[in-house]
Image (cartoon, rainbow, N blue to C red; front, side):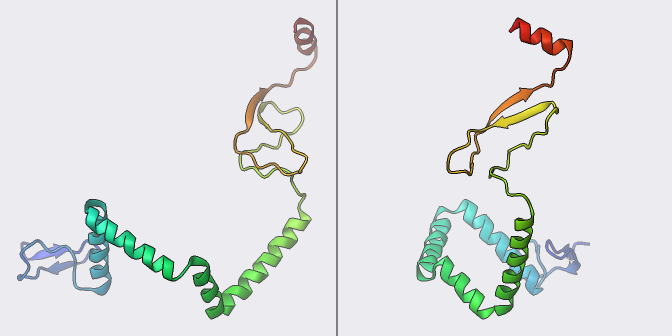
Length: 157
C-alpha cells in the first residue's frame, strides 16, 4: 500500500497526494489541518527561541490591550443566561453553607479527629482572629491507651 497513508488526526486511510515530497501525515479535512498547524506550533514553540519570543511578545501586547477582567465583564454582558445561572447556583451554595456547621479551619490537609481513634493528627495554633489558613501543619502520632498500660506509661514518664 505505497499510495496510502493513515491520517494522524482522524485515523482514516486515504490515498497520498503525489505532489507532496515529504510523507503525508494529515488529510485535507479542516479539523485535521488545524491539528497539523497546532502540532507544528507546539513543536516550533519548544524548539525555536525566536518563535517563542515573538509569540510571548504578541500575547503580552494582546493582554495589554484587553485585561482579563474586561474580557470577563464583556462575556457576562453578552451571555446573560450565564450570569443568571451562576447567581442561582451561588444562592443554593450559600443556603447549603448556612445549614452545614461552620468550621474554623480552612485547610485542605486538616484531619477532624474523633475521640478514641488512633492515628496521625495535625496540630495547628488557633489565632485570635478565628480562622486558620495553614499549609504547614505539625503532624503527630496519637495512640489510645487504656487500663494497666495507661497506668504503667504514666508512672514511668
